[in-house]
Structures are given as C-alpha cells and as structure tokens.
Length: 103
Image 1 (cartoon, helix red, strand yellow):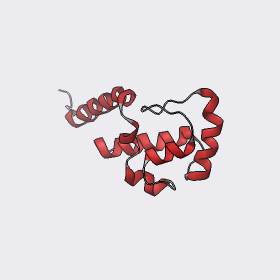
Image 2 (image 1 turned 180 degrees about the vertical axis):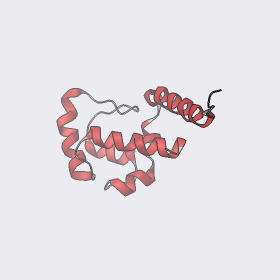
Image 3 (image 1 turned 90 degrees about the horizontal axis):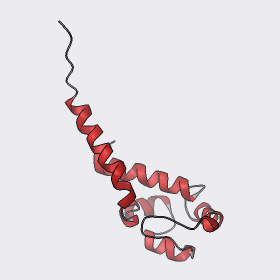
C-alpha cells in the first residue's frame, strides 16, 4: 500500500518549461523586450529604438558578433539598469517566462 501523489500540475508546468526552453531560440527579440519591460528598465521605450541607437548589429534573436560585446555591454550599462548585455537578456527571458507560464 503506497502513497500516491497527484503530480499532474508539476507535469503541466514541466511541459510548458520544456516548450519555452526550446522556443527561446526562436522568439523574436521584440517579444523578449516588450515596451513595458523597456520603459521600466531602460532609457528607451522599445527595443528597436534601443538597438538602433546602440549602433551594434544585432539580429532578431539577440545574437551579436563577439567583437561587439564590450561596446554593447558599455551601452547597456549607460542606458539600462543592467551591467551587461547578458544580464539584460537574462532578465528579459525571466520576464518572458513570467508572462507566458506564470513562473
């Protein structure tokens, strides 16, 4: 006679996390950085304005050339509440997950 646990809720969340994890590679950068996130965390109202003023080539997935990382990190430090592009992206991903799965 064993104890049975209802783990259907955990399986549901796990499935959503797996989906988002695989989708993160394909999420357009504008979805990761919605206007509310940008207004709360930067001196810009949207990611397009932020990127165009940075003068760094960034694709729609947020990928940049390695040689541009120090310049972009400096721009992020000056124009956001973050210390680096990586920290900025990590916060955006966490925000995206909250908005999409409630974590």
